[in-house]
Length: 557
Image 1: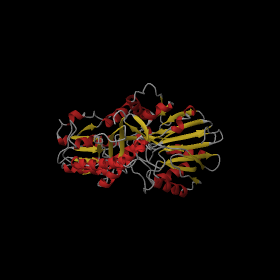
Image 2 (image 1 turned 120 degrees about the vertical axis):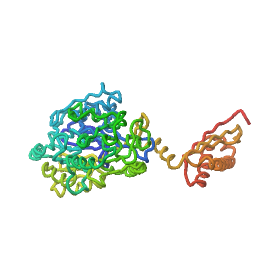
Image 3 (image 1 turned 90 degrees about the vertical axis):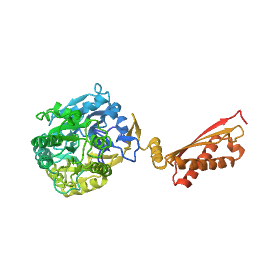
């Protein structure tokens, strides 16, 4: 395990977002110091019951936080900044971000009561600044959120380009196009390594333009005469503008439905975006508008159960409804893993008589990540000596390595979370591994995802649970009838028989013990636990989490 990187080496260590898509955390080490780029989250699934938010375990850098010179944020997506309110108290380092990203982050820090503690330094677009032995330059790129940046990290051993999330969009609607001139200049200077987004490496061609999506939405919205709901990512401010302008062109008022949309629009307007649009209609006022004169932009494009669109479909929204003849447009891609939730939401809308349109039917979305042609172009401009693909699953990383090699990159390295890479000196190589765990937000606490508590909860979710109470007298004899409570194993009608059979098995097993063994609490509890678990497994085919409480009445024989 490396303690301090020397001034003769430049290290790269991903702790999140490498071998997966989401929860990015990247570390660069040089001359005794560490630099962090991004600190994000991903979201829980059925396999993590009770855990909605997951983030990288920062233990490695927490142990070295005195050597951490700062956290640089590439952009404001959740998988790049969402963990800051939870992990920053363990780091307490300076934060650097462009104005829009800083505005979004301030809202998160305010909710966590950290706004006065966490110091954010705003860096202008294309800004330069120094952090210890690292000289930082931001290069403007395009993505699906305002102010995305690639980060140039210059050291005495060479320059690294950390691309962040990006695409090549000739007309992004909001913000400048990718600064090709700056990237070409960087390539001419010489780039030691490029740490690059791999999300769409399996997609042929280019990623497409946001302006073209806006034109398609304009035509589509004009085809309908009833209420329209458009679901999109709240962070896609350009899409909000495109949808709004299309709605206005067809005489519709635009309402925002969902807290995250209002927060994102507020951050955008605070930093100079969306300022030339009419005021958005409040959720409470949408119902007063004629159906043919309203368009709602809603959260819930991924089928999130607590999103605005999901609540509308369930009839739980106090102000907004969708009826037969209305239209729901899903202007977003289906993120892998969300297919079931999105399908359920589509079905619920159709059941209400709502027409559902998605990217499978119409041209209403483009990705914010580079397809193969975009990646090849970036390699032609930057010409790195070393390529390290990140922001992708293993299949994406492997395909990206093959693409980089086809672009004449001398060295392409496969890394996953915890892989320690020496970028310089030498040709670039993997030199070790460090633990790279995950933390889950369990209520208000951060817990390890591989910890005993979550493993027990997962077992209970799949197998149920049983809790027994036994009372023994001083002779080790059962006093009264043991009590057994079952959770998630049987309906009420069948549960009594299941419990009775399991109790009988426990009684028989305990009484088969020698008197001396019945005096040992641990032996009695384990004997009863195994007997109950075996009985329930025989009855239900499940192995429930089983716990036994033992009470001894030592003064009673």
